[in-house]
Length: 304
Image (tube, rainbow, N blue to C red; front, top):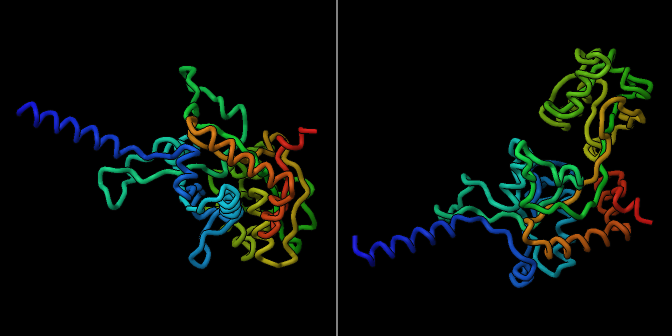
């Protein structure tokens, strides 16, 4: 091979490698381009889902508000969950998935999100280390808490008088999403006495259908999911429980966003938009639109 051919081969290889990198973008690039890509989880109501061919949900609404306040066009980036959150952050915020190829360019990965929604805002998680002491999430910055989430029970009031304690599920069947924290909790708490009454479903929506059809008398899921399902149902026999969850561990947590660690300026700009929405009550209005109760994140509650 001639020196020229070898040089051309090296140049082509380097160009191919560069083209295969999925890129999020700096704040200036986002503004100059006139659009922002916001990442949401696919088929995850009431947060982000498709309805009549359009993207809807509270996270989608917040993403649109972010784009509007920044003066750019809103573009969706749909996320299919991987095995864990670390994989989701890698595939959608800072690197991209090696199998997620662009249809028009077989060498290139599809573009990834400029900002990803529905990421835990938790200092302990942000700085979590692996067995070698390396920070697992060092390639991302988690910021901008916009919602406090929790677990909630909804029950059929024709089958149960109330749910003041989860101990009733020793005698009444309850539906949960498979492999979720409620599934683990209800099959292990109180010496496993609720295990036989715990029914597993693909997601909270299927569990709620199970309650509507009489398979179970109650459902335990995230508060926003429960609120949304009850609101959509419109059936007044479905009531929200007021019980706690002994020995469950963390029962409330803040939800925020994430950007690649080199794009902090974009994070600051997006964070300012979200903070203004939380403090002005605009965020609560977004949640109310979907029939959801809203709790301000602890980050803002602690600030006097």
